[in-house]
Amino acid sequence: MNDEFAMNPERVRRTQDTFSIGDLAREFDVTTRTIRFYEDQGLITPERRGQTRIYKQKDRVRLKLILRGKRLGFTLAETRTLFDMYDRDGSSVNQLQTMLTLIEDKKAALRQQLEDIKVVLHELSAVENGCRTELATKTSRSAN
Amino acid sequence: MNDEFAMNPERVRRTQDTFSIGDLAREFDVTTRTIRFYEDQGLITPERRGQTRIYKQKDRVRLKLILRGKRLGFTLAETRTLFDMYDRDGSSVNQLQTMLTLIEDKKAALRQQLEDIKVVLHELSAVENGCRTELATKTSRSAN
DNA sequence: CATGAAGTTTACGTTAACGTAAAGTGCGAT
DNA sequence: ATCGCACTTTACGTTAACGTAAACTTCATG
Image: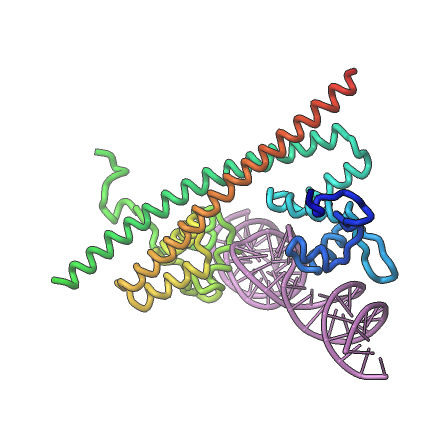
């Protein structure tokens, strides 16, 4: 009914199959420097056409995963470990278990952080009350 | 009744009035390097007897305050600002208000962090569930 | 053909709070 | 006199994830 949803590959290009570094930078709102850095760290390995990097869907997905991992608190090294496992054995049970372990660790660390923050918030409130009290004293003294 | 609680200054020394850098390091469980670093940053200014640093109660209190500030998420620079204000005007209302502002900022940041952590914890749980589901699939397949 | 946008490499800079190594001084005790 | 320990200074190293600058190439377009 709507041409926008036609699946005919001759008439509608739903997905690009290659991307420039700039394309990805714009799409994911990161700098090209960042993307090259990820390559440096062995997280992405785009093809080359001469000097120029050619990114394919696989690379795009990886970038998305890296960014997602970051949001979840994974270091680049951790994400790379996961990628490496996937590369060595795409359907590894081991890999999934490693991921689960990693997730558990992160969750434990975050729960600890959460507790710490709560404690510090209370301490800050205590100090705040102390300040207000002292401030009131000084203000009333100067008002006398 | 107990000599340990006698207040006669001739017989019982309740408080030291000077400390070596090692004394303080031990008491607060920091390295001497740390204490010298604080001095470098202008947070403490002990006297000298030749080369040797002589710390007095004032310095000890400051160190305690620095460490407390750290626990509360204050940077050394922020703590220094507070100290500077105190040094210029020991009973400054302004100084208390600065402190209150700082505290409010920290609290706001922490509350934000708290929310972020909660979100990430949920996201992690979601990914975790995804992993478990996939793992179950693979396991059952290999069991068949 | 010149220009400008986008791409490339190399490599040092950033932030915070120290760690660590190197090399020397001071002093009480043996 | 010589240990040995505590103390001193100076200055580079650490961590993570890029930022930034310099200097160059490639390509499409006017």
